[in-house]
Length: 171
Image 1 (tube, one colour):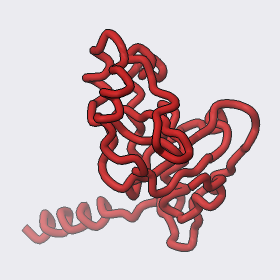
Image 2: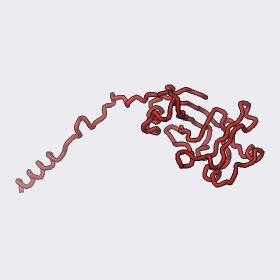
Image 3: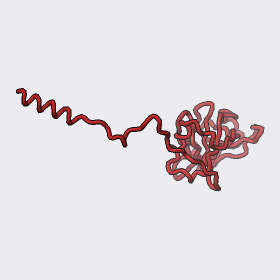
Image 4: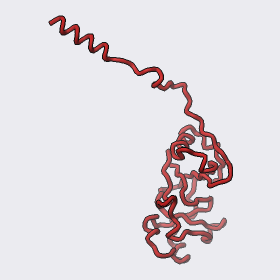
């Protein structure tokens, strides 16, 4: 009996192990630095809104915010074959997939419903559909979109490490 008990205890001790040092992360290690490249190309726009307008269609207003100067046709709200709904990032930030700017407003219609329309609403009707004429809290250009291997992951790293100041602040 003692012999069996000693074998079981030995097996227990030999089966326990710690992770190899290469698999552990020290609290002193810094995450890989994300470099921002501002070359010609599609911009990487990161923004935050006053409320949840995540799935609402954006339009562009004049500087005085009194008139609509640009809006998409229902067939133009796609990005890479999918609805151009922004990519959710950490801390309430969004990655633009449509064309957000400092004078953006949002309509009270979702991308999905707007895409099903045959034509854009008339301007007078669209003006009535505006939810908020000044919904953007923060708007940053984080350089050429093609610089990122994994946009969301790298932008989240910038956000989590409070380094969005590397981007050009538009608003």
